[in-house]
Every structure is written in structure tokens, then in C-alpha cells.
Image (cartoon, rainbow, N blue to C red):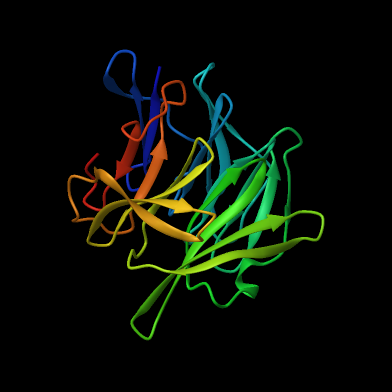
Length: 238
């Protein structure tokens, strides 16, 4: 069964899409009225983080619970679950949060790498935190790929690749990395680690190229393929 949660901060309304019943339904009201919130699922909980507060929705009990952990910056915040931790990366800070202990801590600031102008996505790959960002200067666009090493508390560069896609959605699928569209782009590109570049997947593309700040998510891990992707478009259409 597929469940999708959408939060509208303007009216403090939360809706749940029940994949089994194929319907949208309104669920209980959260504790905080969030603004520029980021949402991520951790096991049976859906966490909502903003500068107003941090809380989670328990899918089984259908209730909201406030946590002690707080964040001071939420602009462009990206979240990812890596093993038993939730990692967050925004413009000036990066952190991890342990849901079991309700404890969080800052890690190496991502902005020490001034080469990355914007973070596109963060994700878990082989139980490590990976980051994809972009550099757009002098009319040249680059996709930058890095990973976080907890032992040294540093981000390590993997590649810096010229690419026309700007602000694409990013997914990791079956240990393969894909770029989904981007600003005015409908291509689907697969990362080729042996050759260190992204290659368009022949015969696969998004229906429309009228997107901005594209996001892509895997929503069915039992029958994974490229068709099982939820893309959230800039015009609020799913």
C-alpha cells in the first residue's frame, strides 16, 4: 500500500493519500503551523521539520507528537534517512538527528564547499550520505557529486561533471543514480560511474518539460522500476 502525505502550511492542513483505497483524506491537525517545512518518512513516522518546531505523525496511531529537537534554519532544507539517522542539509548547516534518542548534532558545514551553488538532493546509498548539487557560472552548468564520511566529519568529492540539466530531481534506484528532468528539461539520465558522466536513458523521459525545481521520489519499493516515481511539479500538479 502506498501512502503519501501533503502538508499545506498556509492553512495548517494535512492530507493523506491512501494507495489502497485510492482516495485523499484529511488527517489530524499538527501541533505547529509550519512555514517552509521539510518532510520525511522514518519507519512508521512522518517527520515535519521547520523553524517553528519539529514533530512527527505516527501512521499507526494517527496522532502527532512534538519532539525536543529544534532547527534554526530551514530554507532549502533537504532530508534523508541513512541507517537509523535522519540527515539534514541546508544553505549554511548540516546535521544529523537520531529519532530513537531525540538527539541531534551539527556536522561539517556543507557550505565549506563554495563550488556548490545549490543542493539538489541528499540521499542514502550503501548506508552513507550522498549529496548532489550544482554550479552554474559563466553560462556553464556542472553536476557535483559528494559523500559524507562520518569518521572524518568531511564531505568528499566524487565527481564534477558538465551537464545541461539545472535543478533536476534525483533518485537512487537499485544502486543506480538517476537525474529526473530539471528546468525546461524532460530527459532521464543514468550515472555511469566507470566513465564518470550522466547518460540519457534511451526511450525514457518525462511527459512534460515545463518544470522548475523538480523533485522525484520512489514510492513503491516492492516493484521498483522507473515508472514507480512520484514527481512533484512546480505548478502543484502530481
